[in-house]
Amino acid sequence: MPNRSVPDAFEAGAFHPDHGNRRVSGTLRIDGGMVGFQGEAGFFAFPLDTVQVSLGGASDRLVFFAHENFPKVSIFTADQRILNHAAFAQNPTLTRARERIRRRKFLSRCLTLSLLGIIIAVLAGVWLAKKPMVMAIARQIPPEWETKLGETAFAQIRLRSKLITDDSIKKQLDRLAAPLLAVVPQDRYQFKLHLIEDASLNAFALPGGNVALHTGLLLAAETPEEVLGVLGHEIAHVTRQHGMRALVEGLGLYAVVTTFFGDVTGLAAILVNNAPFLLTQKFSRDHEREADEQGFRYLEAAKLNPRGLITFFEKMRREEEKLKEQLPGGEALDALSFLNTHPATVERMAQLEKLLTASARTNGFTTVDLDFKAFQAALRTKLSQPENQKKAEQSDAKKAK
View (tube, rainbow, N blue to C red):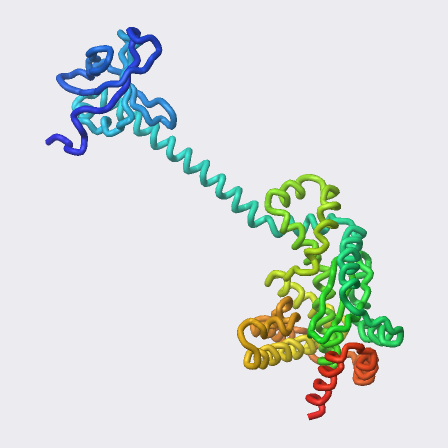
């Protein structure tokens, strides 16, 4: 029974010496033991028993018919359904030719799929290796570059913020932070603490070691351990180079790969020019989790109770819920900039609880050598903005209840 999906005639082309090197168009038919072509060159045919069949053209999409007695003549078609013509099953020579063609096509597809698989695997490998490469590049960046970048960014903060520079207040803050900083490696960074007069519950750290605490956060804290918990988290952002890693990663995958296998010296100008990015960046969830865990380890090493970080996050969560009830839409999130940049999620608090449960130190924590209430009272007297004073008084009233 004939294969009805295979036509009787196929659109074809041919090369014939009567037309020089020009291709001529026509129709190919297999009939009466012959492969025939009807076109501009007239009609000519090859006997099936001695015809030569092969693939050619771009991606082997053409089926060629040739004969040794006519070396300058060939017929070809792009319609590969011709390989299913009944003549290929009936003629042993064509059957063998068809099998060779099919094996070649199969091997070609396998090769193509293999190459595609290799390309995908390489790209996937590069993508998966992006994070380690970014970390490796960040480690190669000289400390002085990080310091310069952080100083450039902090200089812009100085222009638009009011800093508390009172020596007595700063000394008390340094005394508060001293046990924590004592366990943080100082071979690469020299940490400098700053107080910014701002009622928002916020803190941030810049590459090189500049760490800023908003007065709103210090006055809202109920214990020094809560402040130290936040401070440990921010210090971890510096030591884990999250700011630098975010900048490098922002250059794009190609730049990361070429820099990894090249030289980091070309990054100097790019990094300094991107200093403003540090003022608006939001760390990734992975970076926040890293900072939580590393900050916890610093607190643990300093014999400071890490629960302060958990209770402060809980305070942020309750405040956020309260603001959501009071303010419409997204204004609630804007009211707490700390929550925008440091999302105190239930998931993160749960992870910190796990770390605390697994910690070898569950008691015997060091008492902070600072009268925290007196420190807060002294800080409150340095506030110059009426709205900050009002919020500080409201905070005191809540604590007194």
